[in-house]
Every structure is written in C-alpha cells, then in structure tokens.
Image 1 (cartoon, rainbow, N blue to C red):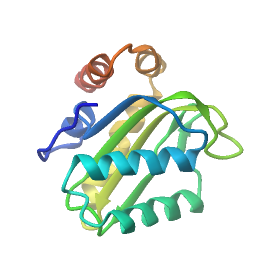
Image 2 (cartoon, helix red, strand yellow; image 1 turned 135 degrees about the vertical axis):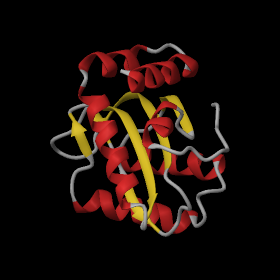
Image 3 (cartoon, rainbow, N blue to C red; image 1 turned 180 degrees about the vertical axis):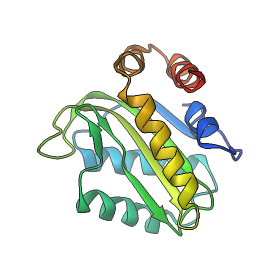
Length: 161
C-alpha cells in the first residue's frame, strides 16, 4: 500500500492521488469496508485528527441513507470536525459486498472525510467522483487494474479526461 503524506489542493488532485488505495480489500460487509478504510486512512495521514469521531460520523452518515452511487460503487463520506483537510481512501473489494438491500454487489469504495467548513470543496469532490465513476469504462479499468500502481494510474488518467 502506497500512502501520501502531503495535502492536495483540488478535488481533481486528490482523486488522482488518494491518500490510501487498497486493491484487494477483504471484507464481508459495507460496514467492514468503512471500518477497514477508516483504519488505513488514520494510519496514513495525520490529517485525521480524531479517529474515533471520524468513524462515528462515517457510520452515522451511512445509516441515514444509501452511500451508493451505482450498483457496484459506494461513496461513504462525512463532513466532520475530525479531519483537517479532505481525505480520501479508495478500495476495490476482493469480492462483492453488500452496503444496503439495493446494493449487494459493491466492489469499489471511495471513503471521504471533509472538514465541516469545506462545503464547496466537498461538493466539488463528490461531483468529480460521481462524474468519473459514471463512466462504465473507468469502472471496468479500476476493477481490472492488476496492481495498486495501475489502479492509481487509471484514477489519474480518468481525471485528465
């Protein structure tokens, strides 16, 4: 796992170079996926200032309504006081996992933490991810990428389109 320890300035830069990428996340549920990515993200960056609060906020948001934006894509996220900048962890699950009754086959998970005050940046990041992940070819390339470096290259290339 490659981690980055510098702040990225724009949503495009963050998506092209997430803080954490896991290409073979072995979990059996959406909640496990959130917990596993949260754990890796808190270990990867000091910008997660309050890990317990961040996890609580993520799980509370996921309980309110679906975090899925496609049949195979989940976008768990929280606007929170627990992070000092927008943070992003991305995973491809080893097998499909259930996030909710309508989304039993999620394979791509993009976990976002955003400072409460960064409303515009949060909306820009979610919009950029949504645009990127609506492209079936990009999703297919992410699912097929054999290595973390290849997965990161797909994200970077998709952001330049």
